[in-house]
Length: 262
Ligand code: SAH
Image 1 (cartoon, helix red, strand yellow):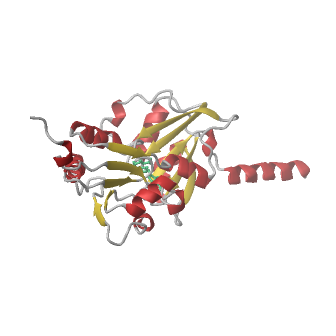
Image 2 (image 1 turned 30 degrees about the horizontal axis):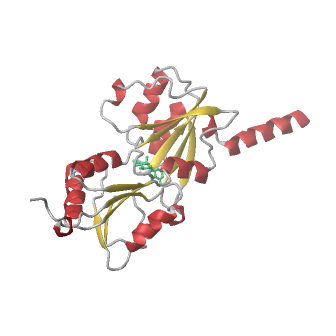
């Protein structure tokens, strides 16, 4: 006997939704619509409270906040939660900072859902790399500076064994996610690989939020900058000539012009 499809329990859908870099205005319309109609929202710690406030007052919000060495929920448990809810017939909005498929473990969650027969829809978000680039007015590509961009995770195991050669240098922009805690190792590694110690670096902390900071330094001063300015997560490190401090460049040009006039 074949099962009667009308008697089969409805399986819910998991929406892997990118919440963008912080500013609620940077949500996509699709993300905003899903969030405003969801009855269950499972979100990361990175998602701004102003965005969560857009959910219906009756919606159930579940935080699975992850912070370095302070995991409130293991990835397997998050996967299991999504699958369990969907199999019980509930649609789930799984809200993630930035884009779900850029260092967001969205791939792992989608795989877990597929394996359990749960349908998935992925809604892209503005990755913090793009939000930070716009907010700090640091173009990631520029015809005079860079035509290759790399996104790298700075907080992974075996950082020192990884081959980063060729990711940074002339004509290239390197964007490092989750790199604040390992900033000293990162600059040492890049300099040991042959990158000039004076390559410009920018740190963009809390991009697109009201308390955003943009800090500049040469590569060799990266660790000192992080420490002296007490840089906090979330922050991105951008390495390459696009990250030059234009204000100080302007000042230098102005000073040279003044000198020439005298
Ligand atoms: N999926 C996210 C990245 C998650 S990994 C995205 O696409 O942006 C978490 C890292 O993202 C943080 O450690 C930090 O490096 C970066 N990040 C996220 N939001 C940020 C923000 N508002 N400002 C600066 N960096 C941010």
